[in-house]
Amino acid sequence: MPFGTPDKSVGDNPTTTTLPFYRALKSVISVGRELLAKQLPANALFDNTAQSLITLCKDLIEHRGEASGIALAEEIASGYTHLDDEQKLQFLNSLAQDFDVDQAAILRASQDYSEDPTQKNLERIAHAVEAPRRKLFRRINMAPGGTSTLVGLRGDVLDLLPEQPQLAGVDSDLKHLFVYWFNKGFLELRQIDWSSPASLLEKLFAYEAVHEINGWEDLRGRLKGDRRCFAFLHPAMGDDPIVFVEVALTNQIPDSIAPLIAVERTALPIEQATTVVFYSISNCHPGLAGISFGNFLIKNVVSILASESDSLNTFVTLSPIPGFRKWLQDTDLSELVDADTAEKVRQPIGAVVGDEVRAALMRLCAHYLLREKRNGLAVDPVARFHLGNGASLHQLHWGADLTRNGKLQSAGIMVNYLYDVQNIEINHEEYFGKGKINASRAIVRLLG
Image 1: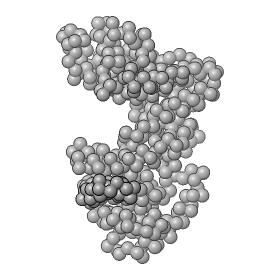
Image 2 (image 1 turned 180 degrees about the vertical axis):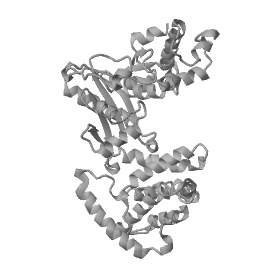
Image 3 (image 1 turned 180 degrees about the horizontal axis):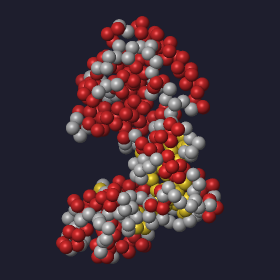
Image 4 (image 1 turned 30 degrees about the vertical axis):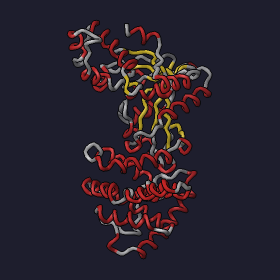
């Protein structure tokens, strides 16, 4: 793609509040492209190969012009998205090797500091241990579309990492930068409704990770009346949400997912609602794995809805238990149930389940959520998330999710996590400080 060619990434769906800045940036980039075309030789232009993109990256690290530098960063951001899988791997390997730290420089700086522990020598160590690719990433981030490209790039790295461990440094550097760039202070909490931009509504179809949205009427039902959807957005990502949560306002704690997501239903008058149900939370970008957003989102939504109506005083989830059946299959259950029962509970869940198997599964599920831990924290990923946010285990529900996925993952069982506004911070501290999981008597009784 030659310099000076218009690129759709320049838009990135600017909002009304960012429009003046966006227009100014477009003007800067337009000038920068013209300058850049004159500065770089023709053979430096991106030609859909990793090697040409690597050349541009080396130029960007040393580049000093502001307008032309942003144009160059935009060229790199756009260029990466045009690489095929083989070329992407070559490019990522170059980031890992050619843009890595200089080990000899680190040793020299460390030796100098050991002999003369001055602030100047300490700063030399800090400079030496930062890989040049961090500077490269910061400069790419300045371009329109640059942030999205880097998030996608890390997503590619995480996919490849199990087979390409040499990319670990690239992952580490991007995660380090994302922790700062996606700090909650930069995030915008927005309620998504039917009047939201179509580009944003379409993202919900793609990103919904818990309960699939089946068409526009289904989506409309999840956004109107006694239903809500809230998302965190980042100014550099336009109308592309970071994480979103779907909420139902009800007059009781739910024991099944089907009524919450039913397309045909009678909406509850808001003045009759007493309970806020978080029934689906979706992290939208694999490249932001390990960056915590959901806890801030839920706590902010609790605060907003609590202030909206005095009658809304119960805050719960209706959550899947995605690791339960895998744990059943992989674990020695001999100390929990007899051999015959162990064999039965490992079988696929059918239309009819005997009382004995049902009781055993509920007991085992309570054990799994309360007592199975890794590094002192709940082993189930959804449990770890909500308990870490300060929720408590409230109730288990048999047959709450009889979809194929619900049966495969959790034998159809779902769980309510209770967000008690008065105890959220206490539960959070006890969970991380003592590994304590607060649970209702109903959950504890299931253990026998």
